[in-house]
Length: 263
Image (cartoon, one colour):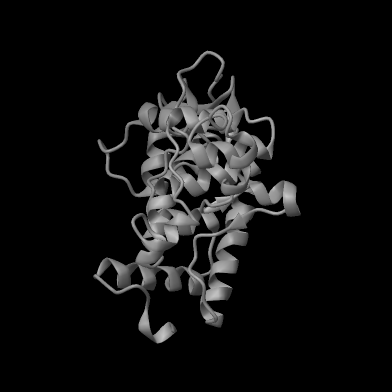
């Protein structure tokens, strides 16, 4: 769960910036004590094989497997100054979400608390897949587009009875010629098989998770990183989803440091 939580937060860091005031984004004064997360492929893979929460904390802060030589002991204190603080795990048995601005506004507090809980629950229900020390695609996270059509595609092609192109077109509403079965399967971390039925000549398709020991490593999550995708990943309520969308619209429109009517 800890690994997935760290990777999820980093993957959606740009989206989270868009719903928080400028003071909590890069360049703002709040960034000194809540540094944004940024993981490249090697850092993400390092989290995948991290032996402890201390290692995860070091990667999130330093962007590498461990702290620079000679800095680990005293660096462990400042490693809490990131958006997602894992040093709290061995200090208090918790993970600290630090990025939100300080507030006494009840609506903001409740919304942020629900958001944090939802991130933990999403990590628990759909953990990152790790194979051979690498982070690979998770079919459960693929296709969280606003229409849900790619998610439907994954459901159809991973069912025991498989699917046909005709089934996919009918269930998703995609137009003929717009679907590349093999590409979509690969993006979802799936290996596709097909068999032509003797009775009607239709080709039936099945897919299963790729044998990651032999296959190329896919992206950690093929879903696009948008607010709508994050809402789907976290399964937020309509009320909470609209709250975060309203904040995104406010800040995207050049709003100030925070929404005035929320204090």
